[in-house]
Image (cartoon, rainbow, N blue to C red; front, side, top):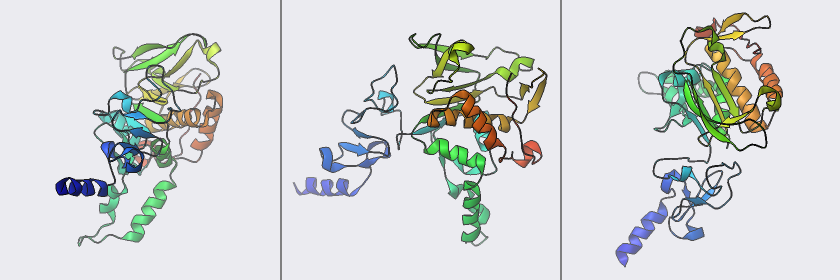
Length: 302
């Protein structure tokens, strides 16, 4: 009995439980209930107490972690997932000069870790210049590109970015149709094709608002609320007269992620999200090495 009581005191003293979430032992007993920022769930069944505010057609609204709590992890109940390939990670880093503090766990979930930049403000004796380090953090938080990444990480919606040629997607022809699961596959396209400027996908749980004229509805698969996939290579877009022009990759990605954020989080239509993204672009600059330090401009696709 004494040994069991001691083990109980030790377990009770540790605040965190399965999946790294905060334990709430008063609800259902020792270690049986966890709470996160956007949900609470029973560790014995891995089911949430509240309905998921973002229902999925292929899974119960009470489920968490994709019904696989051994493989998946979601500390807050929110996610910004970035594909693990080199191009995808570089794309996110290149959105601003502070991309060096973006960290990823084993599942590709992004987070911000300012400690990764401490060495830049530490002298040979190991002393950290607190004033310079704090200014670095303030400057990062004032940067448009960094703030976009932070917004995607902090928001309770689940986002995905990938420099991918092949990925799943939900689609349907008419609003009253059932959703179908399909596969986009550009893996066999010729890399130097002039049509490459069309090789991207920007999908959200928020309808575009013009589906009846564009030929159908699309939304992300794999449980995401917003997803952007962009072909891994140089990007060309068409201007109003139909000629192709190359644009900095970071410029294009910033525009598409910002547009997706406005649609998914703010519930804006495609046109409203596009126009708001253009306004944001006017105060954001590419990293110097990508565009000679000049403000970038993303032209509307025709």
